[in-house]
Amino acid sequence: MNILTEPFPYGWLHYLVGGMCIGLGAAVLYVLTGRFGGLSPVYTTTWSFFIKHPFFHQARFIASRNWRLVYALGVVLGAFVWWLLLGNGERVTTTIPGWQLLLGGLFVGYGARLGGGCASGHGICGIGSFHMPSVVAVLTFMATGLLTANLITRWF
Amino acid sequence: MAKTLSTLLAGLLFGFGLALSTMMMPEIVLEFLMLNDLGLMLVMGGGIAVATLGLVLGPKLLKKPVFAETFDRYTSGISRNMLVGSALFGVGWGLSGVCPGPMLAGLGVGNWDVLWGIAGMALGALAHGLMHKPS
Image 1 (cartoon, rainbow over the protein chains, first blue to last red):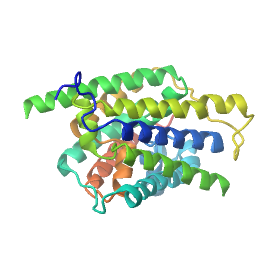
Image 2: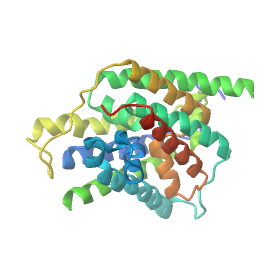
Image 3: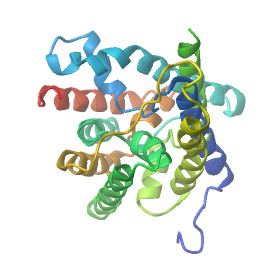
């Protein structure tokens, strides 16, 4: 496959419309509640329910831990609604092994929290707010992501 | 109550979009990072375009959010932590296609294997918290 001659081998409309739904979610959240809809903070704030370490009990985490869980629940349910309406009746599966998801997840979780955001936080909400540091963050993780994915395929 | 329902509604739209755009499948994220398919660019472009309407026009047209007192604002600048963190995020992203939002959407479509990714992210976030002082 060559992305110059065939940039969207799986079609393009579902990407564009899906992306617009994602943006609409972020816009609705901000206009109605004033909140930014990044999804990496919930992986930190939820720990405050289980452990006493002071890092997880900062006021901003305690104040947001409930709504972030509601928001995350909404994301799960929204995907479930898609499955009910447009899915083929079978659950979606992945070919990527569990250890790879776990290992990648460790880097993603640590990195997103240290870097202050992920593809939804820096990507959609940050760039959508014309917040220039988020543009730098997105360019950084796009670059290391491209490099890592291509090196892995070459080596294995 | 209105705030909670708004938050749930926003999450529903976000999750529906992640599923419709197939971003909930780590394979498709990796197809982009290996430059076999540029779909992720359309998702980001469409997402940013629509999000901007709310994020930029909202505070211009409204004194305050419909169900709250203040609009959150970005205050963070470019820092070493932000650059290192984003670089590490990209390494994990490229290793696995795992991403915080899409994995939650993966749960909603019954892709139970994404629990490995969610566990990894939760442990990564735990490590980050244990290794840093409150700020």
